[in-house]
Image (cartoon, rainbow, N blue to C red; front, side):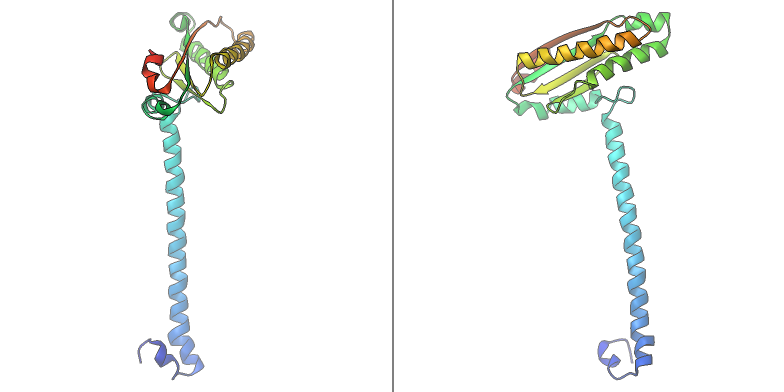
Length: 188
């Protein structure tokens, strides 16, 4: 007979179930299971890829973006922005703390400073750790008063951190503002 639909019309109800409905139901059920498993595998791979992408962009100690992300952003995203501000932070005397008290204390100093920076990041800002004790924030579409206000907020954050930290915290800061087309000049 074969399994074509035309032959199904000539068969009894029991034969139809045995030769047509049952095999097709099993094939459909098997296909559904396979598709479901493939879908789960694709979603797991997607979420794993997203985690890897995040790990590739984020500094593990500070939670800020890392230098690789910084370099990719300054070569692409900011060049079309009309007004860009760049704020730099550099922790003073980190080597002295590392040498006298230990690297754990130095790491804590880096984390405390990074947290004070992370706490002032707004929707137009991106903050990066670009070196062992160097941080940078790039702010899009801003003016000098906004930068000064951001630094005032940061100083408040740092003052609160100084009260909790066991050792003196000293951080140098500087900023520059200009057009995104000249971002390299602003950074320099």
